[in-house]
Length: 112
Length: 114
Image (cartoon, rainbow over all chains, first blue to last red; front, side, top):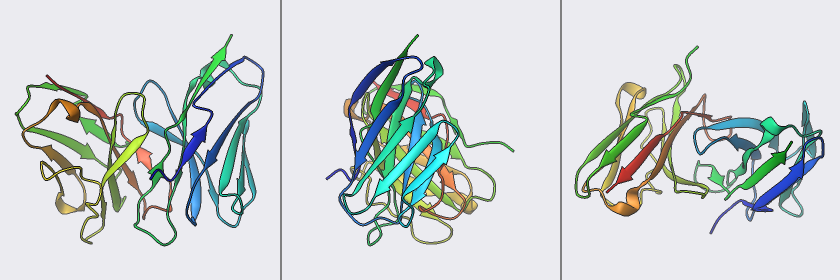
């Protein structure tokens, strides 16, 4: 079964608003990563949060991790049209094979 | 320095033909991954190479799929007797040490099987 599940599947907001995407997972993890994908091509790493961290910031990005609920959120503040993309969370399995499992992604559209 | 590169960018083939997809990882990265992404879907793990260890092939969907990594650098993903359901974007990524590190993705190869 899918390790990471993003919610919502699609999100459309106005430029300048904040966008929040959520990710849930099933197993114990070492870290959780968020990636961005434009136009169905290569993914770009945004941020990595380790299992012993609760919050992390990078520019306009804020990621939280709640290991008790097995969930993470990605907040993009002051959104821009250029933030339009698909966003994926990826998790490893602390006790499993050495591979990342990606969710289905959230398609974010920023309307000018 | 150069990022991960993949070739070809696009490949159109006929059902039943074999295809080879190439990935050049970032120099010095010991870990290399192949993923498949169908239209509008997430990434499906295919195979993982780490240094000289035996690869993790657990994600390969059938025995028509195989991959090699020669000299710990370039990797080739081969799909034999292609089927229409093989149509997807095939993404390669590399990382410095392993799955707990950031993965750097190539632009992908878009495969269309007619």
